[in-house]
Image (cartoon, rainbow, N blue to C red):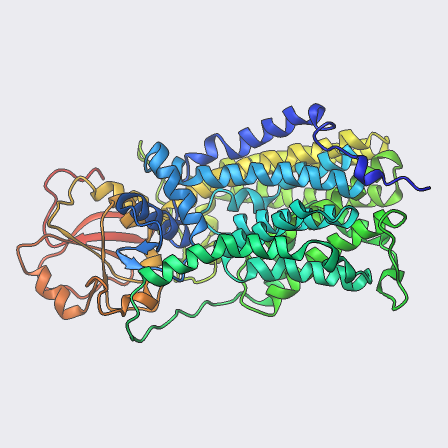
Length: 593
């Protein structure tokens, strides 16, 4: 009688020898320097932080508020976690990023256990965790207050429970699946339900096993799902006033489809090459009408099928709906699992494909090194930096208004590369050593050591990328401007943003006060800012002109290239990253700039 090896695998029993290196990498990359810098960015990062700060200060845990305006369109889980962190350790950059750092740790532990049960080997589990830890996408969005990281965790947890249920349909796995879907809904809305459930339905369709749903205690999963969501929905319904008003939801600009697909690969480079190699081991018969999968005999094929459907459904769903560059993050665990499966098999039985991938990495890496060294050497010297903040590279950029996440990258110029000389050289050295050593040891048949050099290369690359983001932060964060004027801003003074709220969302967070907005624009505040009881946070040009000529001190945040028309004398209080703070009164000696 065949033995069900999957049911006998205990991932935590096999994790002891891998725990310290994995935990050490998490501490290095996710729980040390990266919690402190850069400052919170303008956009969703600053919006979520300000919403959490207001929640922690007001004690209203039902409906998030942004700049005093209700934000029922904001999914609350990330705001709750951040507000709890603020209550526990105080309001700071460190406290804002701490919840996502622990969510990343939970994801790494979960993917280790998942890979153990999928592929029945701790080596594959080790590689899966390493790949996610060194993933560019996971590293970046574990430090930005975006819901994509939380959604990735809950989708992974839901599919982990589903996989375990295939061997033994139990009430706990059904309940946990329902809880994961509910938490996904609280993190990112309906997509938190559609993603895991859609992947499960596709898998059962291709495996011809829809009967599993009836055996898997559906009442337990649905019951816990409703038990988590109904109280919150009820409280929100009671707390939100039911006035009739016109609400305009801002249009989100989508990146081109090819660019979206490109970033799927960027988020998990260079590991996606090994995931592509793993696809060759997926049997074509799985997609025929007569395919049948046995949970024991076809274990490996089932595992590969789940990973392929997981990644494919996630990418396809976002490709033909609303999308941003980072929406594909929930597909990364599936790609990591595919790559880990191939790496663990290749370690035992080295293949020609591994050598080919080694040559691809080597040739591509050397070309990248040449480009990076050219930029680092030919770029002029960086502008001098003040002792307390990064150099202002704004004057060296071709600044434009952007609505895509990575839009500001196209503002970079050769003249600005001098500010990034250290990150460029670190990246070049890491790539040169990593790809060269990887190829040499692959040719010698020492596969694990070759893979370790890729891991090391990615660790140094992520550190360099973090340094580069810190250097670029004056362009994408208003933190420097806020800290500069904070000593000058009194209780009766007014701070105005000449733009949408997201353009300077870090400003109210660091000033810890409500701001006004010049000329209403469709932004994150749009839906409830039209409510009759919304705070009067909008000014038109005439209202600003009246304030400007009064005795009230007014501070105006504005892009340097497009300042508003102001009557009377204007004083530049601070300038950084192509933005500046204007005031109708000169400094009183408090601003440190």
